Image 1: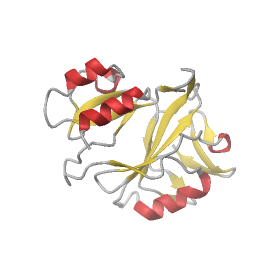
Image 2: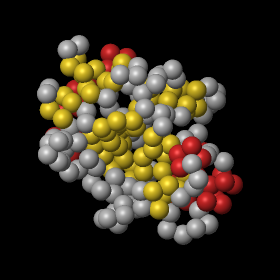
Image 3: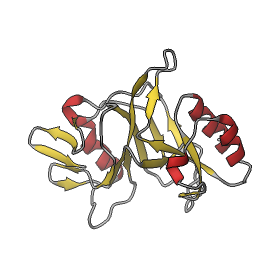
Image 4: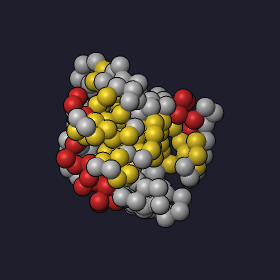
Length: 196
């Protein structure tokens, strides 16, 4: 998948993008500079070897009406675990599935997974790491306002693998209101806060 073509396709859907070298923004102000302007995006991609990134937390428009649907929230599940985040990959996904609706997903170049959702326009959820479910810390992060994720078409700097959409794609569902606590986190059950 061509990185510029991917960036332009995302922008045409109202998703702000910007370029990365590896996982580092190449534009001043990083995700604050994200744009949906095709001329700006083409200008950025005159430099070879760049990967697209998506600025999360921005309002996303309905393509028919232009009305804002919600803000983009991405759950990022890592392929590898660590001492502090022992549940990763498929096990982390299985731990989250009971609490989240099916959605559009991206297989990342590092072997992880991005799950795309909408959060309410007035949500103040930003970024964080270490979602907890049933007392276990998952190798999973979230990106809302003030964050970004690598986009489909991005080349992973270590593996050289290109991130790609996973079929079947779908409209982005809202994070269930029962699972969302504005500014605090995602609730998996009344007594279990996914630590956001």
